[in-house]
Length: 329
Ligand code: UDP
Ligand code: MG
Image (cartoon, rainbow, N blue to C red; front, top):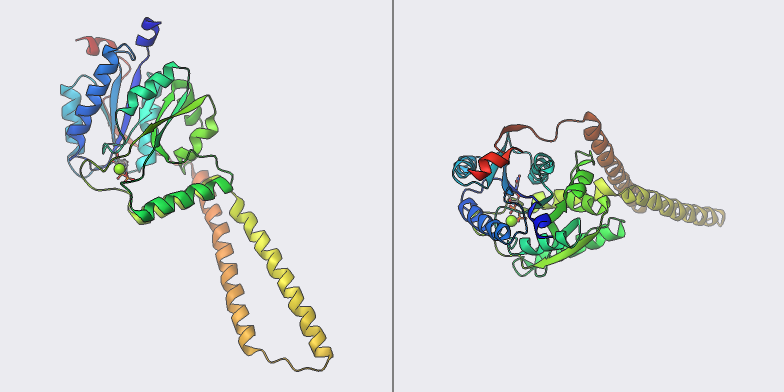
C-alpha cells in the first residue's frame, strides 16, 4: 500500500498574472507542503509545481525562471500573452496530465489555504477522482460580493447547471478526470461548471479563504459580471426559452386589449390613446431589442466556437516528463 501511494505523482498548477509580490511566498509554502507529502509517502518525489505565467507584465516570469533553475520542484509555462485565468488552468492541466496521477489547481495569491492540499490528496487515496475545495467562510468578501455570489449560484441551479456552491478553481482532479475535462473542446471556458459534468466519484474539502497575501485582485466587478454572464450563456439555453414565454405573455395581453377595444368601439365609445400607444410601442420595442440581443449573445458564442482558434499559445516551457534523472540529482 505504502509503495503504491508513493508512486502517485502530483502536479500543482498555479496560474499567475502579475503576481511578483506573492510568488516567493507561494513557492515557499507550496514547496513546504509538497515536501511534507513526499516525506509521508503520500505522493511521488517527482511531484512538481507548475506555474503558468499568463502574460504578466511584471517580473513574474523572471521569478518563475529563477525558481525553476534553483528549486527542484518548480517548473514553469509561459503564455505568449494574457489569455485569462481559465485558459491558464487549462494549459497547465494539459501539459501536466500525461505525467500526473493527480492535479491540483490553486490561485497564486495564497487566498486558498494550502493546508487543504494534504486533505485533498488523502481523499484521492480514498478513491475520489474529484475533490472540490469549498470555502466555509466568506468573511473576507464584501457584503455585495457575498450576496451576488449567492444569487449567482441560485440562478445557475435554477437554470439546471450543477455547480458546487462556494467552490472556485481550487480542486484536485485525478488523471482520468483531467482527461475527461480536457475532452471538452469549448472555447468559452467555465471550468467550475464543466467539472461536475465529467462525473466520477467526487467529494469536498472545506477550507477558510483568506485575504490576498499581496498584490491586487485581477477580477474587478466588470470582469466578474462578464464571467457570470458567460457562465450562464455557455451552459444554458433557458434564456432563449424565456423569450418565448415573454412573447406568449405579450400576445395574450395584446389579444385581451384587442377584444376590449373592439367592444368599446362597438358601444360607440371614442378611445383616446396617444400616450398609451406611445408607451407600449417604446416598451415592446425595448423588449424586442433585449430579446434579439440575448439571441445574439448565443450566436456570438457559436461564432467564436466554430472558429476553433487555439485557446492559448505557449512561448516557453520548463515542464517535462523526464524528471527521473533531474529529480534525483
Ligand atoms: N489570473 C490569471 N490570468 C488573468 C487573471 C488572473 O492567470 O487574466 C490568476 C491570478 O494570478 C490568480 C488567479 O488567477 O492566481 C485568481 O485571480 P485573482 O486572485 O486576481 O482573483 P480573485 O481571487 O480576486 O477572484
Ligand atoms: Mg485571489
